[in-house]
Image (spheres, rainbow, N blue to C red):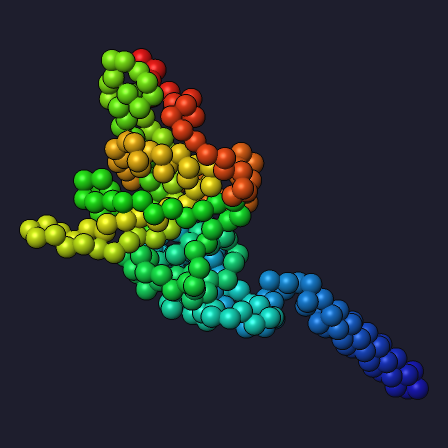
Length: 264
């Protein structure tokens, strides 16, 4: 009769040992999981979630909700948005790289408002200049050219300007992918729709000399390029004209050598 209680106590001891081992193991696993959370959830981030570009958003396009996402930033980002709904439907003033915060200065209420300007200076890289050229309905694509567009410039020149006889009219494409920085005042002519009278464009100081020669000696017309053909906006000096001091003057000889107006 003495064996029964000893067997009972032995079984209970083993049960307690098993339960204690299981509890210790669970405690160890819980501690390990808690310690690993920062590594298991790196995307959660810390800080305030703001709206960023999910993919590259090109200038002068309407921003869709699918172009955006919320990302946590530990530092303060001025003029940022906390909700995707605040940005969706607005227009991008400039190209917005993927992952960059979308801030108020990068967007307009709608793409058709991107012709307005709220900056104190023009975005001109070193070595480049802003040049104002005349435009009209017939010259400037019926007024459809807007800020941020790219235009191609064609020139019609009488070859007499190059000493060619007999003279003839010669047409050449002289500039491509010219960035439009501003659209000038609108003139309302009687019986016609209001159309701007000038465009302010960006080019190197060297090219500006050629442009002024053409303005004085040729008839210019502009073509509006497809946004799909736009090149990247210059941010660094052009190696062919690295400084505004590189402009050395042009005349008929230099113009004809550059575009071959007098060639048959």
